Length: 145
Length: 144
Image 1 (cartoon, rainbow over the protein chains, first blue to last red):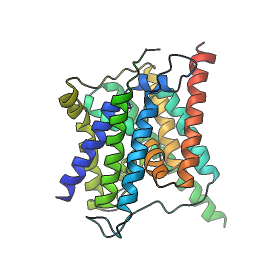
Image 2 (tube, rainbow over the protein chains, first blue to last red):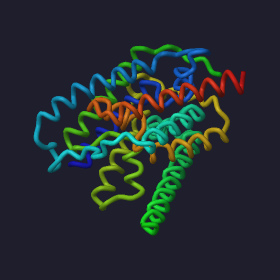
Image 3 (cartoon, rainbow over the protein chains, first blue to last red):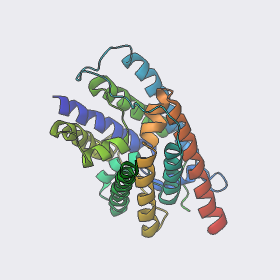
């Protein structure tokens, strides 16, 4: 039951991505190309998503717990550090090169296009590489102290 | 460059669906709808149950283009104006960036901003800026 509900939520998200144009790298890159053939559509995607989630979260957080779990699992980090800013800056560079972001690419896998699989494969490799780097640095820090 | 048509209504309704899905995921299982978090959590799941809900969510996402087809009568347009090499390099950089930065457009840009998280606001402003800068450099400085 729980998995069926989560599956349906995934369908809603994937449909939103597909209808909005976020799964189309040409459209995404044109949004960021103000000096070229600018397509401002993505402002409407962000605006629609943000307004809905902002209002929706307000209603959800009026509850003490979610419906199918014991507690809300929200990110606990609070500090704005170099890792957050550097990582986000890096993400933007990659997004500008490829035109896919993770949320745009995952639903686009359903189209079966090889380009989406090439991007997603590299995305997963990048996540694994970054995690490996992080744990290597953490190990060295522990050894040094 | 490939010209794309301005689609305010389709994009607005698509965005509303994205925000609605984020709201429903928080309401039911109490989780943030971040593509990065969902994907990374599948690589290192904390339990079988943890893997299962992420896999179910991903399976649902992949069905999205078909529902879009049922609704609009055509598969969503997908045009890739970059070379396979740039696609793979971009993917690697995105994967590293979202791991260090703890999120992407859906996690920080939608869910985090909707909670008015200062980390997410900083992250979103940062990646939007570097994406603008990268596209400008690639299209008008290097490619221009």
